[in-house]
Image (cartoon, rainbow, N blue to C red; front, side, top):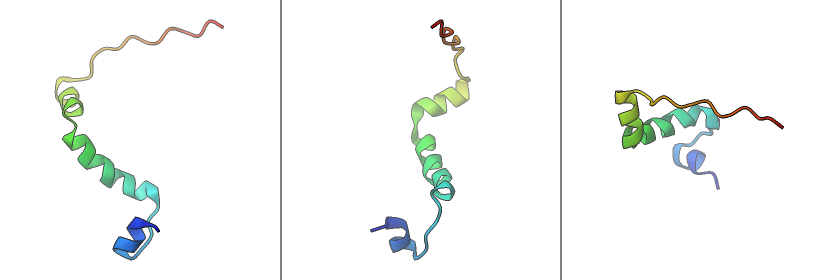
Length: 51
């Protein structure tokens, strides 16, 4: 059973659906919204792999 084709009558590639799923999620994510408003904090680069 494929939910999208069963619901909408046509198949779509996942890559076309992701933006429509991601947008409402990011809009409802308070931490993401705050980071966008305040700017991302400075994060130190991870240490180089010395092996």
